Image (cartoon, rainbow, N blue to C red):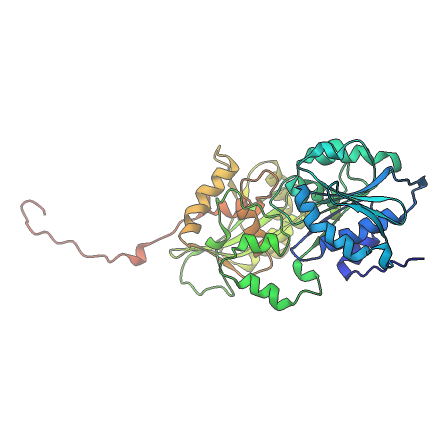
Length: 434
């Protein structure tokens, strides 16, 4: 009896052990996605039963890449290396590279296919399928061809890829993460390149430091971030990050609040829902310094408490809250906490000014950011803020943090009188007055 040994690193093992029927894996380059997929394809093709269904040669195991050439180049040598040939004590009994299939001792085949020719994917029942770099395929490949073909034996699917913005791959990742309607039985996994223990950390650091690698590229390719950066309204590199608050004389501090409702969603369903954001910003002649940004899915009392704590940390600040029903709901609790903590501040209502949200944000932040007049104090909120700036305008992205910060533009008043040299007027001609 031929023995097939499987060797997986911890991240791959976590995916393998998941009981989910449909698995979505977003991972950085060289995490080992394709290597793991090759193991899964071989294991699936060796089985003769699945969920009570007898498997035959008609129940195919498929590996689908964006193109047929890419599929052969990536997966063919991996399956050959891992499975081995029967003549050498391995599992492969037959193969046809032109038609793209490899047959194992079980009599079942692994098919290598390309999504660039969807018609070649029709006509067979599927038992197991891997869709590699799903972001580069048309959504119809899964929705109209593969998913229905899995019904005969209740087959499974594995989606793997490196993010490429917020597209249909992001949508299924989000659906699997939140277990939203239509995604029951799905599970999402997210890994960075560094999660592969066989890649030297020094190599990751080398790529990160390369001057040719933009921040967006590093985050997408190595950290598997779904940052789109497609619209370029607010580029992350425009914002300078410093470790401590600068000791600027004068200026004023503003606490601006963007409310997003008060019901707490389930922990796994927080990616899609908006957050309440409290931005704390110093404004002076030198520009804006964002001292802190608080954010979360808070109940109404917790929201009021976080606002009062922010104001209490910076005595003399001005507080602005987006006006409307949500502001009216939180005001009574704010007043209760003001009396309890003896910290009194008058909230100023902030309005949209009949402008679209994205326009308000751009008008308030873009020019200042381009001229390096917005500085961020180092904090765990920095990356989330920069991601939202990079994705501004993408309908699948959040913009709560830039929106809360943009309200400062409605409130801030800056005095430049200290920079003006006042010269006493003296008439040169007493008759004319000049």
